[in-house]
Length: 431
Image (cartoon, rainbow, N blue to C red; front, side, top):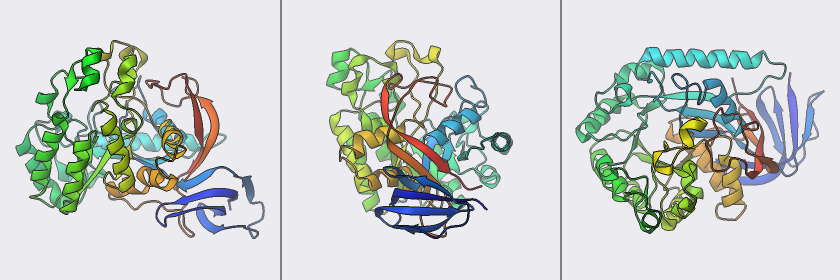
């Protein structure tokens, strides 16, 4: 029997809307007691003083990229899961744009077997570590190229969590067919609203800042015109759809209106779009080259408010690793994306919760229970009798994001070398 007592820990449970200090007793992976003070416990219970620490349901990432297979120099499945665990995630949904892509059951089976090997290896260590459970998005189209639909039913039977390409689909007739074929499978489809013809060669949001910096602009309507078209098609079907990477205030308005009409949609933005706006681009830091690009200050405010109000259901990490040589180039030549699994929780807490912009429960909900619901999964909950799928977080722990302190093989982040307040102590992950 294993038994541990977390004393005087701040317990966050979005499911019950509770935020309180309590003792939490965990026995054999099950939450046995949550009380102001626990005095009865099994013999040899490990007692951990947790004053000032935060305990909540395990975090869930909606979509991130793996380097393996195909780009192992950027990230392996082992390093990806280690980074996710270090950042407090107990579940992570991996996009299918690997090489080869997750566009058939055989490629999915290879990744599932690889995960089993990684997990078995972690159990043989002197100090076994908990690893998050990976879920795999199946590709909507062959090789995620947006041309030919995959065998959705076969992928669903093989165990994908849902369907996504992680790239914008431009063919509306294909999107319609995907919604038709996906409807009876009862799995989420995830689409990114983006009109590539309107994007052109734009690398920053079109506007005053783009003009000042002399960088080609990507207009707001590249997102909103595509989003409006998608919502019109969705209104014809009852297929659950997740809208990825919302980045504009107008996009939030469209989603709010669609939800008010009862459309079966969920939506997310990325953590970087909550922390930055295009004013940060004055540095020309290639690690701020994102797709979609950072919006203006009003976009940023609208996204934060949408998370607070539940218009946007989740905050995605969209962890996108690149090797040093790939990202250390001119801004316009840099591939879009940053790492984030180890950084998102502490930085969101520091900049949004500690400042009073979001409550602790609002942030935790958008990183845990609501992303699970977007994936059609039962969310973890910090309640008596439930499996311990938990994250323990120290918001005051000071550390520096450096190549030797990051679990990820890549270090493409604007916080590299910068001090950070807050770090995950550990996770509990069933199974």
